[in-house]
Amino acid sequence: MSDVFVAMVRDHAQRLPHQPALADSDRSYTWQELDRAVKHRARALPAAHEMPTPVVALHRPGDCEWVVDFLALRSNGVTVISFPSATPLASVLRQAAEIRAAGVVAGRGELTPCRPDGSTAPAPWWRDISVVQLTSGTTGEALGVPRSEENLLDEARSVAEALKLTPSSPVLCGTPVAHSFASGLFLAALVTGAPTVLVPFFQPAAVSLLAERHRPRLICGTPYVFRSLMRDRRRSGEALSRVEIPMTGGAPLHEGLAGAWLEQFGVPLVQEYGLSEGGIATMNLSHSRQFPTSVGPAVPGVDIHVVDDQGRVLGPGVQGHIVIRRRGNPTHYVGAGGTTLPTPSRTPTEGAEIDTGDLGRLDERGLLYLSGRTKAVINVAGAKVSPRSVESALLEHHTVDDVVVLGVPDDQRGEAVAAVVEGDPDTVSVEHLAGHLRERLSPVMVPRRWHVVPRLPRTASGKPDLRAIRLHFDKDVTPC
Image (cartoon, rainbow, N blue to C red):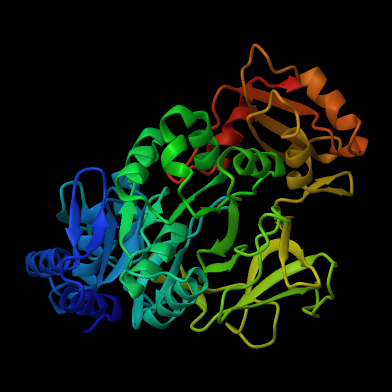
């Protein structure tokens, strides 16, 4: 089986043999070296026809060797399930076995066989599937999103076109390449022969060092990544001032951070918007200075609409459900036992458009603005509260470094608004924060339960870990 991305590596090895292709903190590859490494690794791994199912989970740090393994497995015709390296191996083995993977590549690159429960999958869901990316699982158990080569290639080409990538445009991924945000940029760079610089675990010092060494045109990361880099400005200032496109995604960008970055480095932060079900869909490349809170217009080849509950398209400025159409959109998820569930859609044709589960609006220019998750809206005695609106107001307070607002069960109101604030517990005053919100929001939006922590729990990509954060409300919290 031929994989289009593996074929591109071979083509670059012929055309650009000594040009840089891939790097991390410990090693680097030219295109010729990467091609040789992939071929060598492919010989050490089983081919698709040699396994019970042609599916393998990849559970390694997101460095150069992750890419070599990914491409080697694809060269052997294997569908790859991409697991974040922070996921415990026991959990990876269980989940991989549940969706009928033959094994897991982990640790030092060894292939550990999975132990399926003996039942057979209802259908071979892996046909024509290149990679399975996991949903965030913030509203339940994470599901696998099977993405075809057609879908991955469409994303890679559209992102590369929007960014105008060339072989002299290094891309530094400040989030692990196992996640859809960074993997979309990596594949876009691969399509054009641009070098990719990888950071398997986010550390401001490592990003700064790699930025100094490789002088990337683009750095990607969550807002937390860029906030941390600003705090480490003594080490990172000179290297980051040369970055043309600092791109943030995975979590909302607050206007205060956008303004502070622009003031310090003279270049605006660029928001992107994407999802596991189809990859990067928008980038605010041309309007980020004037409209920093927008995630931008659709990238080439992507159609975005905002619709009402019945699926009818809404006009500019009207909030509704965000739906996205891209070539090869995933039509189903993969769950336990290899069973498949349809991806959400608000249109009559299944798979034509993905209902992202996000709320937002488009303006007259086609710029998209996000306002929250459909399932995250908090129902307080019938009143609907957007967590994002409360978070945005709290981030205006000088003692708040970051915050997550969510709904928790309440005997009287059904749900109560709760806030977990990242900041110095000796400095943050819940009473002052509540007063700050009362001056800006309606009373129903002011959290009734609070928790102040020095650091929010985070995933490997730097996003707040909502599952871990909810555990704070099983402990003592501050009422207000």
